Image 1 (cartoon, rainbow, N blue to C red):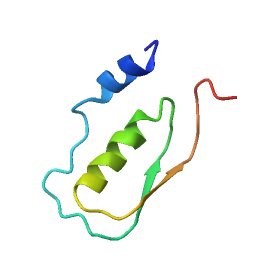
Image 2 (tube, rainbow, N blue to C red):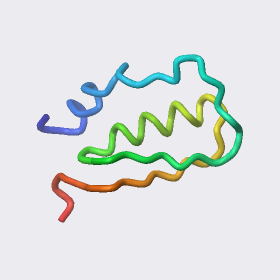
Image 3 (cartoon, one colour):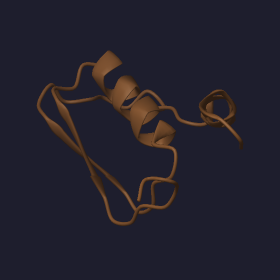
Length: 67
């Protein structure tokens, strides 16, 4: 995926909360590997849209172009 638009389209529709209740407090969002950061962005957006508090992303490993 050559650019951010393609990366965003790739994740579009791949995440959902499946009707589960979201508590109103803060959330620690853990991902094992991050490249474009779109997974974290979309997951955090879904959580906030469903009523969560602040979302704090934690990543175990990073790949990509930020060196």
